[in-house]
Image (cartoon, rainbow, N blue to C red; front, side):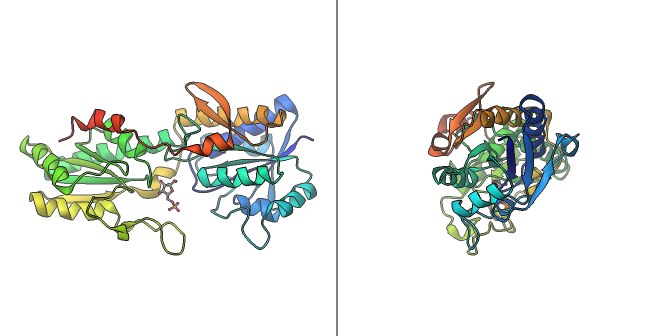
Length: 343
Ligand code: F6P
């Protein structure tokens, strides 16, 4: 058969629609494949809620942010209707031969389990955080870096006018890629990431030395950064299992500490979900389109249990196992490389 269902799961990401468009256009044109979209991630698969996806639906979609399918953090094994057996029945009823799951780590591990339970499924890696080992870059990351860089540029001018220290918090719970890249691009005086503890004394030393040169200090901090002296009270995961809304995030902890200790007036900005919204960059549209198109080759080959990924400049295939083996965090040496010019 040649009918497949596509879903987008987990946090959304600029470029999701470009993946969908790439898959539908190439699948129809080259292989005569047909597609439906499951609504709101695994929810739509478990409950058989679908929408038609054809050439007319995906027209002009590559620049559109979000996902036309909707997304959720619902898991495919979630009771009462989840599980591979039920999903197999849904696929049968809808006359579908396989599933394309576009998502992050959680989606990939759920997909792996479904694959092992006999479901025909392939994956496309997705996250703005860029922390998936399967792929050199994830689509959406470049867009998030552009948005964060623009924020730094804007904070710099107002910071300079008022001679303030500006602290910008960007996303990244486990990996500091967005902070690192936007911080380098925007010429931040300090970049703080979850992988690398820095003491408040060190941060204040950087800030003070910038101020002594007559400049306004710019600090970029990833949401997952913790001061060595901080407890888990600032964890981003709530007791209910949802991510916490980032009120009183790390930037709002750091700014008053910096102000009190250095005597420099300091302001905090939490960029939040602006980093995930809106138009993807050209780079992300190209990457997402290529991944979507490569997915149609993968399902035509019945390459179940694999994902498409970027290696260097090539689109390759990797098994779910390999994709999930490691978390891609910022390596020490990449951080040290830029740390020498902080302050
Ligand atoms: O994984 C993507 C991401 O945007 C992280 O950077 C961030 O910590 C998290 O999702 C936010 O999740 P939510 O959309 O649940 O607030």
